[in-house]
Every structure is written in C-alpha cells, then in structure tokens.
Length: 231
Image 1 (cartoon, rainbow, N blue to C red):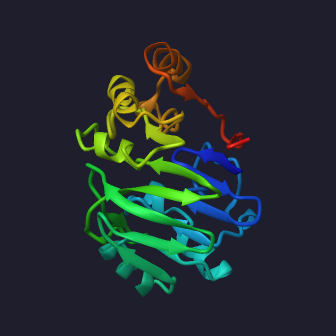
Image 2 (tube, rainbow, N blue to C red):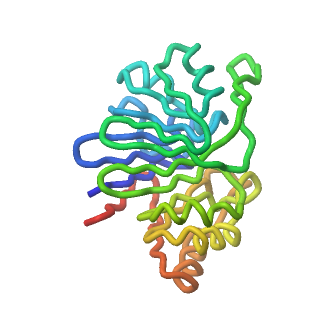
C-alpha cells in the first residue's frame, strides 16, 4: 500500500510503510505548508524543476538525511555544487532509488532558480515523474500546460495522477480535466492552487466535473491530508 500526503502547494510525501520519498518539498516560506522540513526523513527527493517554490528545502533535507535529489541534469549539477547528493537524468530515463524508481517524463514550463542574492541560475528543462513505489504507479506532472503526449504517459498504467489546476502559471481546471481524460488514472489529486491569489481555484467544482465526465475518482486533499492507494 502507498500513502500520498499533500504538504501544500505542489509538495508531497509518499510512503510505502517503510520509506518516505519527497516531491518538490517547498515547506519553509510556503503559506500552506502542513509540515516543516525537519519532520521528514526521505530516502530520496524528486524535483520536477528549478523554480524556488519547488526546490524549496530540498538541499537542507538531502544534506541532513544523506538522501539523493533526483532531477534533471542541469539542476542536479547546480544542487551538487551546493553540497547535495544528486542524481541527474533526463526525459525518458528511469532512476532507481531505495524501494522504487522514477521515470523522468516531459513537462512544458520554464525552469530556473533564483539565489538569495537575486542571481538566476540552473537553467534547464522541467519534467514530470512516473513513480513506481509501494506497488503503485503515480504520475507527478509538475508545473505544466496540457500537452498531447499525456496520452502516452497514460499508457504507463496510472494508479494516480497529481496535476496542477491553478491556471496562470500552469494548466487550469479545464485543461486539467482534459489531462485526466488522456491519462486515465484511477485517482486524480489536484495541486498548485490557492497558495496565492493568482492561482485561486474551486477544487471541489473541478472534482465534480472530473468525476461526472470520467471514471477517475478525485482525492481533494487539504495540506496535511493523505490518501492511501491499494488499500
């Protein structure tokens, strides 16, 4: 059984009962964060792209827990220069971690990190992940627009898909609904909404539309809440 816990914005933890993996752990400075970074002991950290609201506390956690950060090549190189253990990959590649694996898949977005001095670094490409862990297959789309190759990602056989619905910086509710129709996950989980005014959305209304137009169940999670797959 796999437990997916929403930590706020686009941050998630997944737990197979023995090990935890973090995705985009933006906790410090996140107004919706349900936990602090000190509460987590992951065996790996997955980063979809370099924006500060996704990298978050990844380096601090990686150093403390001696956990690898798995991300795209350029971002991995930059974070390694900051002292973190990293594994860099690229679209189409699969990276193994303790208890599971993460296939790096495309996303359409931008990707750069802004340092505390205001310098913009770590150019590269964004990504999503198809994670196989705890006997389940979960797609974390990252920040992306809708794109036709989601049809191919759906062929991975998804138990769950985590999708942004906030609009403005990512796809909005209507495109996220179209994404569900292509991906065909058993469960859809919305993220990247209501953190800031620009991405305010009615997640319950989106869930109603998804469940009325597809066979997918929607798990709307408040920060800190979890859903169990395979139970």
